[in-house]
Image (cartoon, rainbow, N blue to C red; front, side, top):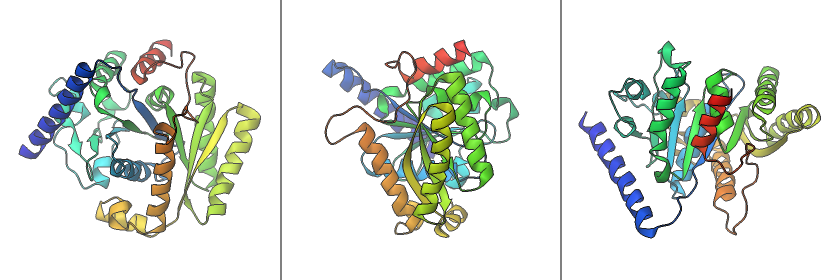
Length: 308
């Protein structure tokens, strides 16, 4: 218990310091970079990818938070061997504030753990969602990146978190069902939420050419039938280091840093970081926007909840 109290205290100190610095400098807050990592079907390695991207970006000096938004079927904590005593369930019930449940992941990025086996969290009511979004917004000025590990599929929670993010990264593998379901997810987001930009990570591929083939197949149908842009972030090879890392409950960047999978994940993280922290100032590419493209993540989240 003392460990989690220490982490909550540390987080409060970070938040208070950042708010004080912002007030003293009298400058506008840096916009939150909210990135949803999603997939059309489960079992494609999405959570493993997001964990390692968070670690890689934290190593680059970024302040990274990971929201396990797979409400009711959370597993980020399991992949890291963590046993959080408090989760979003305690925030939703009013027992805790958001700072009280945050736990440290690996090498100084933070995790907002959800609950597993709590069916009530899989589909939150309007009031519950508004309360959750209000709590999360308190962390905004202390974050460079908020990664959202969504659930798989096309539930309203999954769609809304994706629609509200600055960037939607879809994870798919070479299996036909994975590609078909990834297309179905993007189709819904394009039609219902008017998203016109997506990024793709091809996972569990046999070669770079195999990964490019996954992208080419999806990009072809997206361009022809959805009129959306799909950018290719890269691929992660089918690497025995990954299942070994899962069994060890450690990110592959820690358990096998020289493995092909780890090196590719580092490159993908660097590509993402260059979009938002470019060497030369430039507008980020591959960033979906709503009609009011200047709106914050929280504004978009509330807008889509009310509109849809």
